[in-house]
Structure formats: structure tokens, C-alpha cells
Length: 332
Ligand code: ADP
Ligand code: MG
Figure 1 (tube, protein in one colour):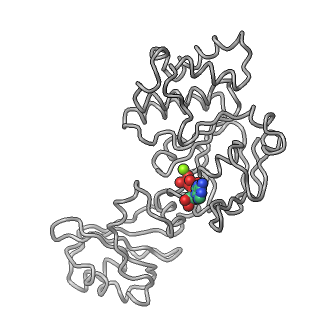
Figure 2 (cartoon, rainbow, N blue to C red; figure 1 turned 180 degrees about the vertical axis):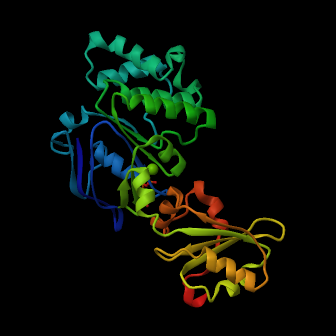
Figure 3 (cartoon, protein in one colour; figure 1 turned 30 degrees about the vertical axis):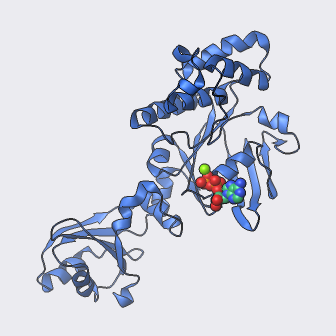
């Protein structure tokens, strides 16, 4: 349905999109996940014909977005990061204008606009000026514009940025509803959002596609390295000393959990289970372990691992508190 081949976008010497290759098949909700600056918006702008690529091509239902833009664009509805709203128009005036641009025939226009207004629940504000609407309602107007004409593919760039929690839940419901009739691609730097809504994830880091699969498979594939969580009154440096002779440990992270407690995450080498050795090491040092349990790899770990060198996105700031106390078993 969409084929992106060898896509490259350079801004001067900076490569924002670095040889992206992927396919979008009908009937799924795809999520572009990546930290800010990863190249999500640039990719979406190229896919929708708003921006030219430096190299590569985008084929939409057999039409090259550059060579046959009209044909290709007919299959796509797009909500860019900054929705192109006209503040001095009413919702209805704006949607009429958008319907005209999309070439929706005059007879069908009124009826279709009403249908879309009802669908995204803006029918009751249709005669209000856009500038007088809240951010949440404006976002829905942008969404209505993308849905008009009922294109097969709907592309939404960070659709919930700037919305409050209630509005976020509403927009997610709308997106799920859309997916019944459309293929939806949405971007976000927030993992929880992508996990919640999407059934296929493309993780982008520094303009590259670093992983693409279903959420379950991503967890499985990268879940071979497991971790053990511990809690103890020992300090990070004591933990390091105690665990130094224990084989099978890849790396240790610690954080203080308030009071005298230190929480530790012990990353195991592939295929190792170090729980018993960790227990014995603490016992022989006569330091009580208050918690010792296996922790499964979460999608969050996968995302962190794959985008490690990037800026840590807002949604993961809690992870920043983890401090690595040894990068390999040798120097623990
Ligand atoms: P994302 O949407 O994932 O946050 P963007 O596609 O907006 O990422 O940006 C990718 C990279 O390209 C960033 O480093 C950004 O600074 C850079 N970039 C984006 N737009 C421009 C532009 N018009 N000129 C120069 N650099 C840009
Ligand atoms: Mg963006």
C-alpha cells in the first residue's frame, strides 16, 4: 500500500532521514516511535508530498508521490505536527474549504462534512471561530480535515501533543475508531501512547529504522537479556563490591529509592540466570537483600536500548535516575 525505499533527507550536512526502507500494509495501526529529532516529521512530510527527499522514493498504491502527486495524495489524509488551520474561519467554513481543496464534489460535500464533524465530535462547535476553540477541539478539527474524503491512509503526526489527559483518551478512541475503516500511521515520542494504540511499531532513531515489528515480537526478540531487580540497604559501591565476583552479569544500574534503600537492576548476560548467585553473594557478605526478583524486558527497555545514544525523551525521565555502576563484569 505504501512503499518507502531508501529514503534520505539531508538538511545541509545534517542527515535527518538516513536510508529508510519499510512497507505499510492495509488494515493496521502503525506507530512511528522515536525521540524528538529522530526524523519522524521529516519522514511523514516526505510521505505525504509536503517535502522533497534527497534520495529514495515513496510509492503510494503504485503512484510515486513526486511523479504523480495528485494520484498519490488522493489516498492520504494528513494531520501535520502543526495543523494548517485558519483561525478566522469557523469550523464549518474551514472544512468546506478543505473539502474543496480535496476535490470532493459539491453535492456530496455538505453531507460528508456533517458526517466527519459527527465522527470527531465537533458538530456542536461547527459555527464557532477556530481561534476560539481549545487546543483539543482544534486538534479534532485538524483530524476532521485529514479524514475528509475518507482516504485509505490517514497519517497523524504527534496527534496528542499538547492535549490534557482526558483529551488524549478521546483522541486515542477516535484513532481506534478510524482504524476500522482506514490504515492509520501515527507518530509519537511517547512509548505508552504507541503501545496503547498501535499494532505495529517502527522505531526510528537518528533517521534510521532500528526496529520494526509488533509490540509482542519486539519484546520477545530483544527480551533475551533479562534483568534481576534487587533492593538492599547497601550503597551502590557496596553492591558493586559484593557482585564483583559473580559471573554472568552484563551490567548493573542503581538508584536510591528514598531513605536508606538502594534499588539495583542487574542485567544478565544472554541466557544467564544469576538470581541464586546474587542471593549467595549478598548472604555471604551478610548484607540482607530485601527484594530479589526477575524483571521481564519491557518495551520500554527495548526502546531505551535501541535509542540509547539519543536524547532521552520526556516520557522516560524517571529512568535518568538509574546510574550505571559498571559497564561489564570485569570492572564491577
Ligand atoms: P521528529 O519529528 O522525530 O522530532 P524531525 O523530522 O522534526 O524529527 O527532525 C529531524 C532532524 O532534522 C532534527 O535534527 C531536526 O533538527 C532537523 N530538521 C528538521 N527540519 C529541519 C529544517 N527545516 N532545517 C534544518 N534541519 C531540520
Ligand atoms: Mg516531529
